[in-house]
Structure formats: C-alpha cells, structure tokens
Image (cartoon, rainbow, N blue to C red):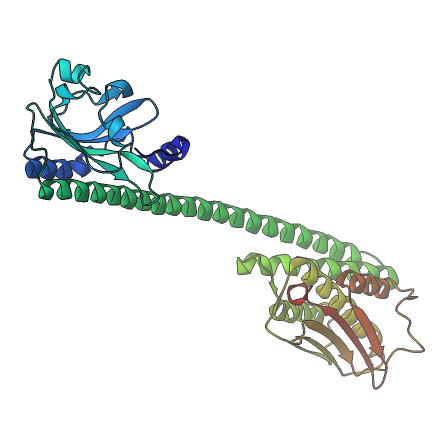
Length: 384
C-alpha cells in the first residue's frame, strides 16, 4: 500500500481544474473502450478529493458523488498496481458497502490508478459488474485498462497546458490593454503640457512686444525661448507616440530652427548635426536648455557689427557612453576670462546648473570665436 503527502495530492488534483467541471464528454471514449475491452456493463473515471468520490464520466454509473466511506476507488488509489476484486461480497473490506449490499449490488471491480507524472494519485479508471468474476481480468484487459488510465492523465495534462496558454494570452491581452491605456494617458499629458508651455511662451512674447525698454524686452524673449525649448521636448514625445526617450537629433534640429527664426538674423547660419540616439526626458530637456542658452548667447553677443556668421551645434555619443554637446561660433569671442562657476549672467548660471544636473563638465575655448563643450555620461551606458 502506497502512502503520500495528502496535501500535495489534493493540490495536484485541484491544479487540473477538472473536479466539478462539465467536461465529462471529452473523456467518454475512454470509458467506452474500457467497458468494451473488459466486457463490463459499468465503467467510470472517478476522482478522489478530500471528502468525496466524484465521477467525471462513466457508463451505467450511479450517483455522481459518494462519501469516501462508500467509495471503492478511495482504496484503489492506495494500491501499487491494478486493483482487482473478483467478488466484492466475499471481501471483508467491502462486503458491508451499501453499493454491494443494496442496489446496484456490485460484485466485480477492477481499477487502474490515475497517476500524474509527479506520481500524485488523482483517482481511477474502473470497470464493474453485477456478477462475480472469479477469473478477474485477462492480461490483455489489465494492460489496456492501465494504458487507458495513463492516456486519461495525458489528457488532463494537455487540458491544463491549453488552459495555461489561454490564461497567459488573456493576461497578456489585459496587460497590453493596460499599457495602451497608460500610453494614451501619457500622450495626453505631454500634449497638454506642450499646449500649456506654448501658451506661456505666447504670453511672454505678447508681453515683450509691449515693453519699450529693449533690455527688459530681451529678458522676456529669453524666457520665451526657454519655455519653447521645454515645449519642443513634449511636442516631440507627443508626435513620436513613444515615451521611452527623445530622438535628440530631431529635437536639436527643430530647436535650432526655432532659434534661427526667433532672432531673425538673416546673415547668421546655424548648422546642426547629431548622432541618431535617444535621451530620457530629463536629459533631453537639460540639453535643450543648454543649447538654447548657448545659441541665444551667440546670436546676441558673438556677431555684434557683423553681417554674417556661423553657429555650429553638434551632439555625439562615444562607444564608452560619453556624450558630447558642442556649441561653437566664429564670432568675436568672449572678452576676458570666462569662469562658468562664477558666471554672473542668468544664462550662464543656468548652463552651469544644468551641467551639474547632468553630472557633466563644461569647457569653454575662445580661439577664433567661442566653443563650448559639455560632456556627460549617458545613464543607459553607465556601467556600475
């Protein structure tokens, strides 16, 4: 007689999700073959749970549920091999069973255990007769009954695998729907942020047009350009429909084009180039604001009295993950020594703070114009 961990056996049985399920028709062929091969009027597939014997399907079977003390199959799952009882009324274990004493007055029983690949015993495939059968089952009948029992468990496994796939697909669909909803929400957020920033930019522009003092009006224009720089990031995110990062090349090109129009210096060219890479939202905003400040500074100060000039903006990322943002002009250059740490202008202070946020460094060269190089490490490429 085999012993086992009952909690594990019951967990295995519940794992198939077949007890109390209306799937008996899927297993009808097994009991039909068993009845035919063993030449018995009754054949059943029975599952044994904690308190009852439950019939999945059968031929000429009685009650679908029985208490365990009336179940012959509850004893069968404890056996190590095919369990055959030629005459139940002559067996001390079953002679007093109500199914033997009363209707249907069972006499012959043979059962094969339904055992999982992990050797957990779920129930039986059994055949019964109302007449004793002293000869029991032939070798061929016994082999077939056990083979059918194995095939029934295989069907249990296939049903569970199919259910797991269906559940997985359903879970995947729910996850995808949730992601789609979040993407739509993020897109709407970026759209609203962009619109609000553009509104602020327009208000600053309107206010600047009404100010007589050129210096004060210039401050409003600078603020407008900073707001516009941030708005462009959200606009690019909204248009791309992907929120994993900002395509920095397109962002730099659109930002430089905006600054070119904003300052209206027809003789000053801007040449922008960038590697095809993406940056996260925070880094893209910081880089955009740095470009805005340095390019604006060049427009305002590098070409005083000149009718033509060139501003170059470039962004590249090396294999090591080091990013370099360069803004250079061929103007008159900065007068005197420039210390970014002690910079007094709001624009350079902002550049200094943004470089610190990037965890980077800035170098300023003043030969044949001004060249500012900001270097920082891309977070995605940083190795811990």
